[in-house]
Amino acid sequence: MTELVLDNAMLVLSDRVAPGYVVCRGGMIAAVGRGVAGAPGALDLEGDYLLPGLVELHTDNLERHVAPRPGVRWPIDAAVLGHDAQVAAAGITTVCDALAVVDRSDSPIRGDILRDATSAVDRARARGLFRAEHFLHLRCEVSYAEVVEVTEALMTTPTVRIVSLMDHTPGQRQFGTVEQYRAYYQGRFGYSDAEMLAVIDRRVADQQRYAAVNRRRLAELCRGRGLALASHDDGTKEHVDEAVSLGMTMAEFPTTREAARLAHEQGMGVIMGAPNVVRGGSHTGNVSARMLAEDAVLDMLSSDYVPSSLLHAAFLLHAQVGISLPEVVAMVSETPARQLGLEDRGRIAEGRRADLVRVRLVDGMPVARQVWRTGVQVA
Image 1: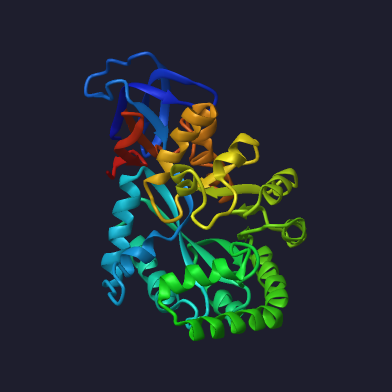
Image 2: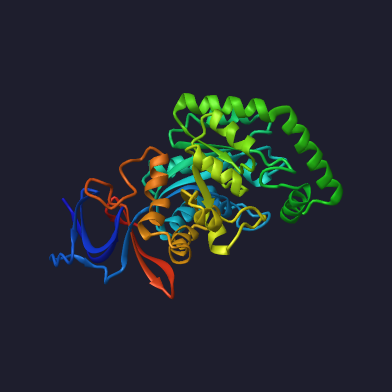
């Protein structure tokens, strides 16, 4: 059996940071020791940090590889592998690729790639082409008339692990005002004023007609299949209460301090975007992730649209907010793994999977220098 010894490292363990070494056999961590092993053939990490492989619950990064420029569509299988290489290089060894179930007229790119991307992820996984381990996260727009039927069909894919329920109707949640919505979508899609007004009117009408019943039906489907269920962009007490009543266990990107606090108090895992931390605030003007970390109501981070932000944000919260390194590393490894029901990873400990990341601080910025999944170097 092939043995890998990672020596002379600063191990980020669940309760402390300590100098030590890790022995990997058969894809698992066989031993964790203090000091320097000095074993023949050991890889000297030169005092770099050794972290558990990062676990990503929500990334839109695949979309950027499929549509790298306006009007450009990249071959889907190549796009999936390009995305995989990027997340692995960022230290992410388990990733949930977020694919949106939306009305194509509202989001043409997302509507076009949904089924092709799902199939491409399954093909690459079956052929053993991935560096990271990939699952699927279905982002369901509850005001979309056909969302339940489309989602139910996709749930037969064994890689689906998370479903999140979204409502991007202008004037609430992520877009607290119609003006916010107008600025975002006109900037993204180039709508004229008349086109934008028509979109807004239709979105409001669709929400009133479909959202409530679709939200309940999707929650029932997920509970029946044992899938992790997340709310999205909660902004009020009513949003949080509804999410809890429907059995949701995660609150993705709450938009207000109050909603995040209430979700956390009711046992939901609060997820915020790592880019929010790195940039110092939300790009749409919602609550700061750093503020929620200071309030001790932030449980997990997601790289969202920048894979490298996951590692970067964890170290920023350690340096700037004073959260211990074991605690911030758990936010991007063990805690999200537990939300997926993956108890075999997310911690450097005997009997866990040998998913590991070597990290060096360069002028205060963490750099992933080497990455292993099940003891095999993937980046």
